[in-house]
Image (cartoon, rainbow, N blue to C red; front, side, top):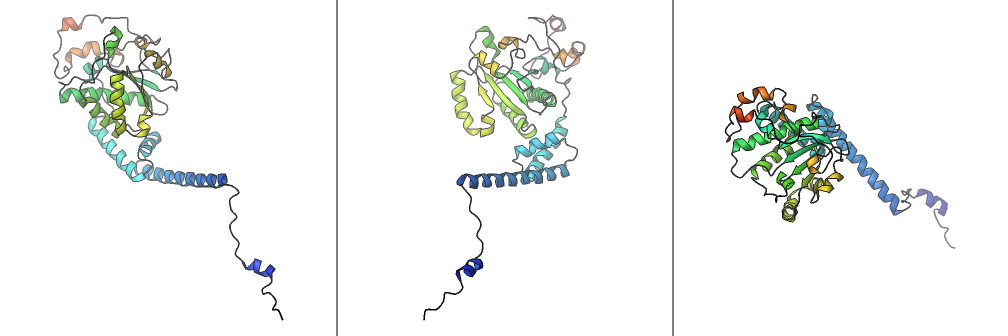
Length: 307
């Protein structure tokens, strides 16, 4: 006789372990994986934030977040970077006192004025930098002036970021060909300071005029710059394209905008006219006679006070 099938099919089905229901579609599977990745990433960020705030409770939250983002939310690396920056700031004398560097500020090669379309301060850097014959003291002094303005601009920014407009050579205003890059020691020295102590503070940088020669150099140099930084740097050949980054009423007049402002160091140091003769001159430069310095400034009248 034929043996009955055992166990019955109904009981056999009950004995089998229940299997996880498959995803309804490949799209659901990807969505679940992305959601899981976001959850883990947010958990990593929260753990890093707790570590940094425990070690540096006196540092502002926005400042801590910048260092965390710069180190991809690695709590240990962000803490080490922030600690080194705090030591540097104490040794460097931050916030920078403008009086000892008044003569360097008076050159007007770097200053903040106006805002971009997002309301961030605009930091102008005019000229091709320092000459190749610049001394270490001149490089350090120029960098100190840049740090002063960077501190001031980031402090006045809602999200701590600024837009930088780099005018390679102001001679273009007189239809003269732009000069070269000048000494690379100054931009290298300044970049080292900014990367280590002002992370995630650059919203965008606009370089003008970007002629074919400069654009070719940037194409090569950009290979050594990380992707996020490359996305923030914009080369402009036509002056009218500056209006894509700075509104007309905020852009300086000599750059094609409607802002008639002209920088004057007395906007930063009101008593500069009375103390400038007592200040030490810029290294490598001799102080002009008092009679020459008392001559009124040339050009159109000075505009409003900076924000």
